[in-house]
Image 1: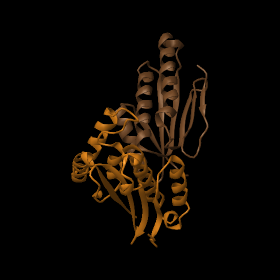
Image 2 (image 1 turned 90 degrees about the vertical axis):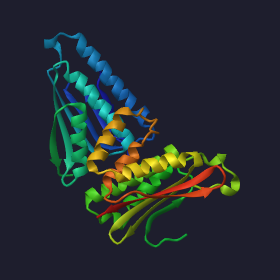
Image 3 (image 1 turned 30 degrees about the vertical axis):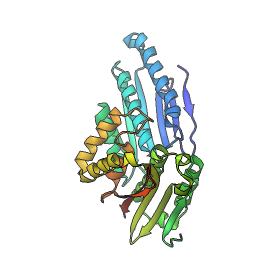
Image 4 (image 1 turned 90 degrees about the horizontal axis):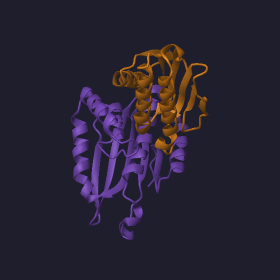
Length: 134
Length: 170
């Protein structure tokens, strides 16, 4: 699969989906004007990637993926789509592709830590929580 | 209407560009920058959700009788170490009972009940068609220690002007 990169704007996050380097990254602020239009290509990419991996034999599949979530802020409409991303990651994980999910939050930002814990619980994926200095 | 304590005091039609301008105004206010970062993020998030609510729920202005037309309002003010975010918009009178019910229900909930409702709504709602219990309202209720205060004011035979106030403590 071709990698997908979205550069950040004042209201939308940086997104990197780079399977060759086994690296998925989400960072910055998410409150785009049209949240659905923004996240739909990402969800479609993840769906196509899952379908592609599914066709491969077990030992031909990607061995592991690093997924880093370093959101500064996201609004409640984005939260719905971020949960959908985790549900997509869960489908990838179900193919025995190991995921290393890191949820970064700024020190003292208990709200961001808590929302990460809720996302982990709702998507049934385990997260590593990392305090960032920024 | 001048308000000396107001960091944002806006009345008019709200577009996405207006929202960007108001958020920049908030980010450049010294009262906002003096806050601890987690509190700042709560205030910022509450302003974003309040404006999003206006986008989603406000009744189109053009449908109203000219004399009764009232623009949406958004105000952020600091009062004795508390930040109060107020947002107002026209809604249909038919929507008043339903909105009152939702707000009263949310106001009665403790943290655990709010988390359960959040989970129910985030898994149920059809993405942008966020017109159910309102993930935004639930998120705001989770970030405030006080109840969401609100009032409805009659605006002609068909409309009501809905205002809500959310308080964030330092």
